[in-house]
Image (tube, rainbow, N blue to C red; front, side):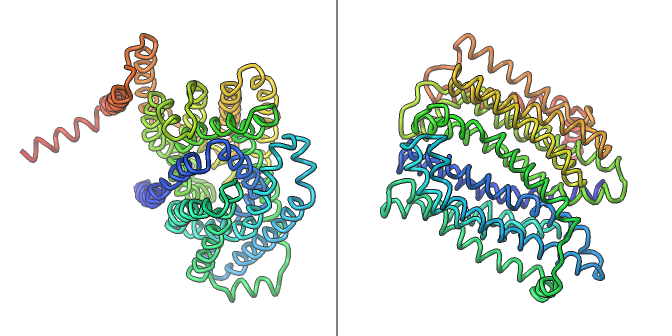
Length: 499
């Protein structure tokens, strides 16, 4: 377990360096809102979600499969041909399906989106899609390469691309294209050009880590890798539905009559809250290869301990960030949005989404990485159906808050299913004694926030609210450290010994 701790910490640290680079993501959010306007941001976020769903439907299963098969075969040189066969399959299917999506967007998007969103909204959305869709085949290649590098336990390339290169380029290029085309299409040009550079870098990564001749031999002797296909196709649908579950609120708001501006405001608040998910992604990306090895070795005790320890670390970092957002949500939304926002309560209803995701959804990684993609698919189909129904029920009645409530309920439901399945399919158990401390500290801190809000004690000035937010985080840290009395005692002894 000590080796596991060291490797996980090293991988997570590399990924966290990438998260620092992802600060360009919120920078992009601010830039689009302030430069292009919040209404155009509403168009962009709708189009971006459609592209992300298309990409997930095409490549997500092959992406996960690449990590699994590279991790499985890399240590045995006699089986390297199987590794390259899986990569060749992933590249081929990604390219074919990517071209298919381009054809669908160009020939069928107008009648589809006119019927869903109406002519006015679609007239601004469809030209954006015409530009962004060409990035899909390049992103399909890049994602397979990066997943393959993670199968080699090399995390830095994912951090470099997603944590620095892509968001920074997108930020700079989208800003530059504003002076050429100030509509949503200008954002699309920046998106496309940034991905072109990233694609070039992914070619370099493949050349450094893998063998072109090995890939070429796999293409010359090409055969369908049925094991990969059986895993990847249901996983494609599963990840697509997962993204659909988390993004259905944004897709359904304009379909149910919300204006571009309202969609932009909701999308801005949603992106602020959901940036917290990167904390979990930093650790889960480092944990995934270990899931495969624990399960392959039938080390279920090690898998459960690794599961619990990783979940504890994620929650310990995510919960204080969520406490900050609970206090400063309206201030952040008004700071970013180009339009004044008088009501940001919907953001409070979104807070359970990253809390549940960061605290307990590591079980979903275990279900997927242990090869149970059909179970993950059934989960997603069930929860997507429930989520659509919830949005139809809650958005007309409660507006933006209704959309947020639907997302939170859907996230809670799928996480419950994933944890049950991780326990009974992979024998992975979340140990209460390992994970309870950050949650207990968070509950106590959240109660203090609630009481201060209830009695209007937090102040009307942003500086007072900022001081209160910092005080709450310090309170969380003090409670958390106090609960870990062994750690406190150990550090006190170390201090006294130095004296």
